[in-house]
Image (cartoon, rainbow, N blue to C red; front, top):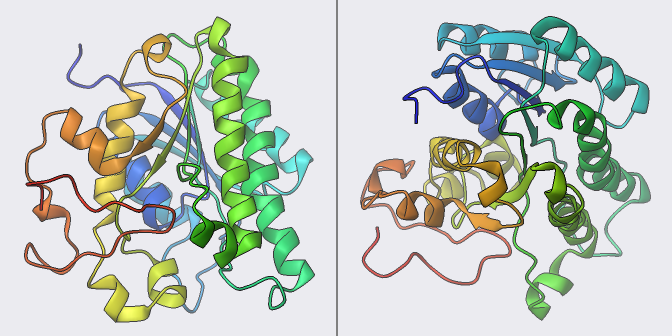
Length: 285
């Protein structure tokens, strides 16, 4: 296999102006990939770093070609326009990454209807509609992949009851991804989900899931990016319908020490992420 398998491949990714999505885009850019990123962040946010334009600059500095697209995946016309713009600029779409997501982990009575709707519209419906728009172009690709950043479906009661609205939204993404795998298996289009075993150091963790204390128990977004790269460079017809955990993907690819990914240093105590019950495999830090 080429040492730069994503060179001149086109990735269409939602919500990649910062965090995990940007890390995935940057890893592809190191191969010389084209990245079309669609997101709403055109102006700097007081609590969040980055815009689609600063993300595009980083992607190009890493060796890729970037197309920043200001858009909203809750709007069907915006999705269609973004996909059309990507194809016009790069001539193809080889990879669709469903990264955009909204989170609100409160109980049923505390979840406002508009917040519930936001999660369903971005997470589940957005994943479906972005993928739907990319499918005609993925059919033409040599090794087409859909990657959805969603958890394995864990029906343990603690996950079902903890934050029903968010769980519905994230499990909806996962169900869509697994459904795509079967629907488009005859076309050779891979569809998989990817989720971290531990917390990832992002703005969501810092602002919503525990602040600095949680960040110290998290891994860097690069672990997600490296795992995504590993999945996206596998033969599509041989790698589809899986609910992957990042750490398991890396271990399978030959990584034996994950300590370098710890945000607070190799000896940091890590926290298992939502929807994941088990710790690291034995012997792996």
